[in-house]
Length: 482
Image (cartoon, rainbow, N blue to C red; front, side):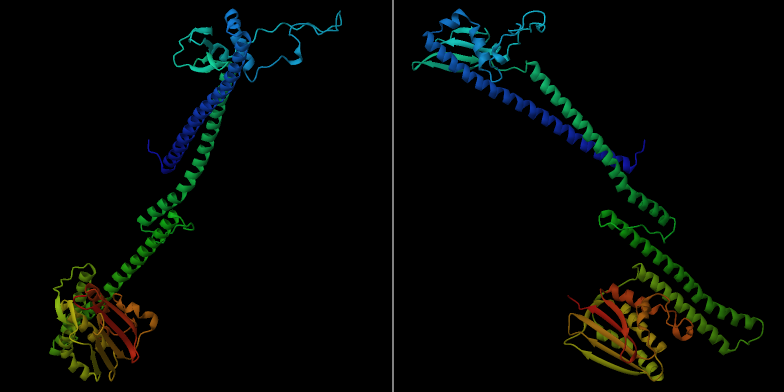
């Protein structure tokens, strides 16, 4: 039979409580039994001391053990008189006789004689020995191991008072007392176990309730219901688990939305150039347009844009899964930037974009990286400037390697990007203006690829507003050897 977590937790708590109660009861019973025996022993020691004093007095009066030898029962009577609970009969009158002054018929009925009192266990265990250790009175038992008390008279040891060791409780009242204590302990244990069972059941159900809610929410999450959330108001481990579950569900929900948006954007990006190509080719087939060199160049340009989009998607997918190949080594980042920038100078001049450059730092801007991937990163940044910066604008490039990192800043002029959308520039297929012409705006994959390349080199890439009115892209890479 499969047991649920609540039942397992209930049994665990109940077994632990039951073992604790049983152990406590056993220890208490042992302690009470031992303490009761100590109490009886202390009473017996007091009685033995009194009995020893009486025997010494008796010896001094008789100048010997003559009275005890004539009447061996005298030792038992003296022992009974020495016990703390023994004393003279109340009222001083013998039992079984009618009280005086009430003769005749009006007298109360004569009580029946009581049975002789049961001798105290001490009376049956004491014995008397003379100075030569010969037993005079008492039980004729094996006295080995008995405790002997010397009896002195006139400065000499005249005998020994012995007590046979106790082998158990033979007195019925004493046995009844211990039996009642054991019953009381058993009742207390039963009540505690029942209370523990009730409390453990309530506790188990209370602890398992949030786990059941979390399990049900997990099933919903596995079924694709990413909007599922669980209450997480407590500050214990279950509350932390609930909050972590909500964070996981939120991340999955965001990823699902991003995946759907990604598929929709990819479809849209691919459909547009394909629709243009289809229209141009159908126009050629229908004779609407003639296969002139200009028409062929237009089709070729559309094919190149489509090829660039597919290549960007491929590069981005490789960088996302970490499958881009990197051949890293020590290189001068300033030199890589200059090599990448040289082919773009004429294009900047053609668009009348002023290029400003500034370098600062001692030695070389040496980093550990892949030259080809870093050139790809710089090319994407420069392409964005050519696509987005208005003609007659400015591009300012600064590189500083005076600190622990090599920092490259790219600031361009208008148009700018709203501050709340700067971080979205690194998202796939994101454009500030969704209606912007794709022939100039691109597919919105370049900066996403740039950030992946920067992170693969242990660096960072951020975007912020530029003082020139455009966008400020900062690339920061660690220096080689640090």
